[in-house]
Length: 250
Image (cartoon, rainbow, N blue to C red; front, top):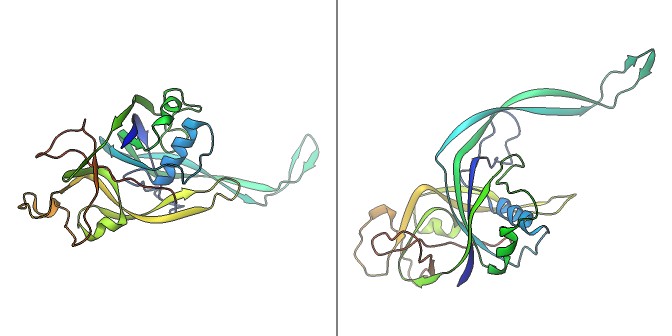
């Protein structure tokens, strides 16, 4: 499988849980699919067909922290005021509310897209490179193509797995993430469940081979073998290379 591989670094990023509106703003440990879609659209300079490509990634951070930011709460109403003898009505009133936001520090993303023809768009992106919020500036450090190889063994690390993997492993955290957010003005979200491996890894071995990693090994389900695609340039671990789990936006 020929794919595009894009490496990106960001000093700070944050992927807010969309259902937390007040108080402490918690971040996902990895970017949701909707964030990846928006990132690709920014590089292309247009809104792509969400059924036209898939992605996989490896995402790691150096640590976590907290930032204090101001939220501007705007409500209808407000009292009239006078200026130079003239009386003016107001339609809104705004207040400033400090809020704590969780941030991820020293982020590194290796993004794989099954559209290698997108390469030139990432070498010369149409809009500023960000990861997450508009103020979270990032930088591409590598844009190239790689031919993934089929394998009967591999390891998944610091990545996003389909929810179907929950039957195969107890590791990772199950989360509800936005898979896709539609275009404005409605921006209708579509949510789905995923398994986030953050700072963790799981190993897939051929059926019948003796166990070596205990709870880190994916269960082999009868009649449901895993089709593994691995990056041949990745670090080798006990005869295995980094395996990729591809996701779509539909």
